[in-house]
Length: 189
Length: 189
DNA sequence: ACCTGAACACCGTTCAAGT
DNA sequence: ACCTGAACACCGTTCAAGT
Image (cartoon, rainbow over all chains, first blue to last red; front, side, top):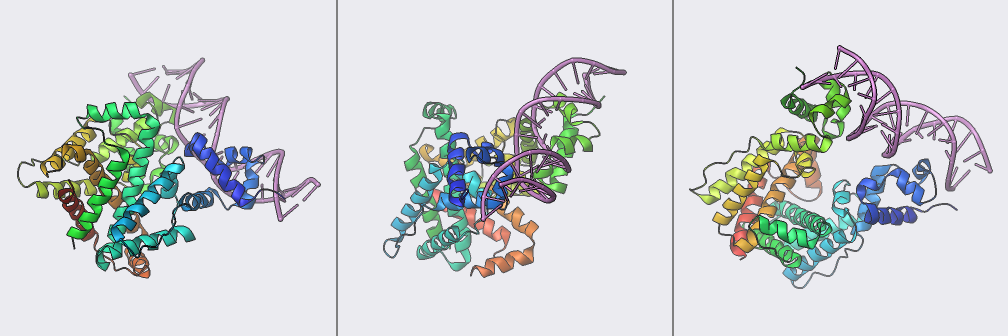
């Protein structure tokens, strides 16, 4: 009964993690599924469609928790979940950036993010800009983190020191950035 | 006496502005220079080398001004110059992101940025992270701005309103983000 | 020193044809 | 319903050969 969309997604993720986005082609994907590249087009519209599916899958582990309590805590844990989801799949950031958030779960995440930012006290006029800053920060950080991790911890430390800086723990550094943003949102109105 | 590196750069920029990065190929570039694609490899090592040259050229208009006076003013004008340079060339952000800042001018800019952040009072432990946030903010903003501008101002306003938000002037919005970062850097130590 | 023809090993995508 | 062969119009890159 042939290949399922779910198989296509999971096989694609496996290829990403093994060989990266540059090696995820219609041909390599088809080969891994034991079909021919042309056959993929019966299941998905085109490669862009595949990237949208992958972006949605990458974001699936990011759940929407109840945020009626401590807004600051909710924002930190939301950003942390987001970061962890991005680190789970190689080149996740590039996949998200090459797709548009038209899919249902990603839209929900944006709305949830906006609600949190609003609850944090950001004015309606600023909260879209703030949300973008928040989103872009997590994406850029996770991208750097993945790059450096792949580069090797030793070399990273050496390179950072070479610039006259001291190396900071990733977790600590990530929280620093979120703190900066939240404090900034509070301060500027 | 053949083609110069400068001609290659300028022609590439012209192709970028006319047709975007996806249409800047060794073949289209060669055709525009009235040579064959293979000939380009006498002048440049490969396409990555070309992108590095373009990134450097895109950053050339960003000058390093004396910042001994008002640090806040210097940071705002630096970010503004950066943003303007990115908007001058289509897909400038992608070009910068696909290249590494190994070139002389880009290295100077990073150092200048670090000096400004330091002068703003950010501790040595945080100033690399802060610099990254600053850099990523300008890149992401310029990328969005270019995308929206190309998309048409009317549609943008409609789309933003559709999300229940009000449309803000780009300049105003850009300064908001810089303010958020600077206030955040001050607040978190 | 500078350029070309021709090839290699790839891409994404389409479409008539098979079962 | 699902898959394939074969083709189309591309890529970046190499290299022997030309001037």
